[in-house]
Image: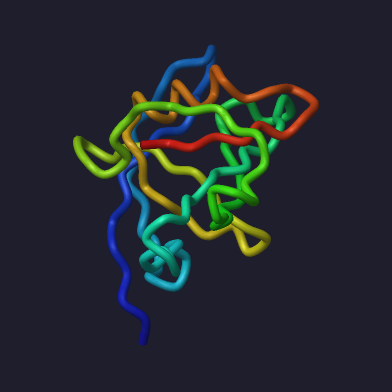
Length: 122
């Protein structure tokens, strides 16, 4: 039996009205990452482009040495505080990271329609 938790969120109803929902998410579905392999490394979010589902975020996280990192943009934001009422899916298996609604909105506004965007989110 797997452990599960409740992840608050929302869906869009008729006439683009926002409906708050809470759904159960298996611990298996949650993205987990450990510490960096070296203290001088950085972790970057490769945010997938999107226009088909305008409220859905998906990306991949990679660890890089600072010397080998691709060009990236910085977003000064705290991931882990506040009410985590939204989410982003990470990786090929689309694991979930719960994020704040305001971070969700910022990532949606920064996302390109046709190309990946590489971000360092602090």
